[in-house]
Image 1 (cartoon, helix red, strand yellow):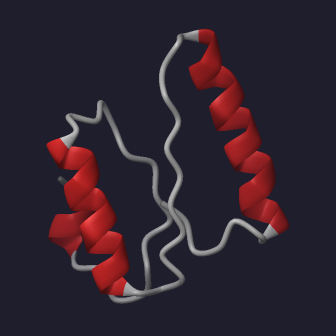
Image 2 (cartoon, rainbow, N blue to C red):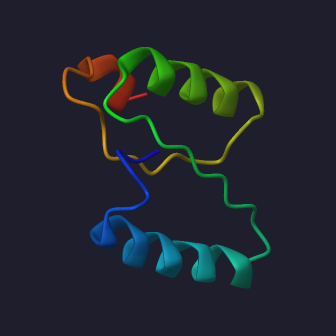
Length: 70
């Protein structure tokens, strides 16, 4: 979960993460939250419902600690 995939910083990191996950045959799911807390929360809830093994995120400004330390 990132602010904006168009940011070159995130693009390079995400490319590396996806490459590593491909090696272990894991699925990579990406969402942009654009610093919208509700959008971020909805996506995290969806990942939890799907039984995601983990979440890598750059939290939106104002994200409550309980959303970061799940």
